[in-house]
Amino acid sequence: MHALVWAVVLLGVACAGSGVLALVLRRRLTLLRADNEQLRSVVRRRMERPQIFSHEVRTPLALIRGATELLLEGTPGPLTERQREFVETIADNTAQMTQLSETMLTEARIEAQLLTLRRERVEVRSLVRQAVSELRHFTRIPIELDNTGARISLDGDPALLRQALWNLVNNAVRHAGPGATISVQVSEADETAVIAVTDDGAGMTDSDRARLFQPFSSPPGENDRHGTGLGMLVAQRVIAAHGGRLLIDTIDGRGTSILCALPLGDPATSLPPPAADQETP
Image: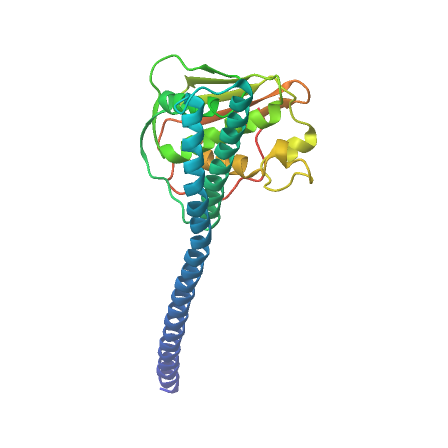
């Protein structure tokens, strides 16, 4: 009889304890949800600054770019060789600043985990052709394009893929140096679109390669050649988000090849955290 009484008492205590535990857990869950919403609000507010910055910078840059394109086309009248050289310099640096503002905004969205892929059917050869055509207007380094063959289509975010490709070719332009030639080749192998960006320029030293995906890591005074590093970081993350990868092959003094491999399947739609290092074939 006593054992039965104790069993009932212990059962009552256990039920009361589970009820208290449920209340505690429910309260903690409510607090966690509130904290999560507060953190989301902080992130959204932090994102407003780069968005405003990007808008305020891109608007005047678009006007400058439009004016330089009209000058280069000879709309107001013919330019002397010296004048054309100055206008091309303005156009080149305007394009660099426009791309930098877009890259900074994309990188801020990725860091805040607020950026997802807006997928649609993308024809890879057409995307590459448009990007190379645009870049040819803003650099004096020749860019050769090998882009013949059957259509290559995948589901992806065309704006982000274009930005990643622009950054890859622009990186080659910066590292190649004067007198070099950039070549861009598009092919398909094993259900994978392969975009190869190659230059026959100076190549990269071991230290250059180690800093390739590390923003703002160039020594003072070297940013003119190496850039901020944001472009390659964003390119790496965007390609990874599409289930792809970047392969780097470079020899100091002999040029660099960057292979971008994009699967034609359907990877996840959220951008992952950055990879620690570049891959090597």
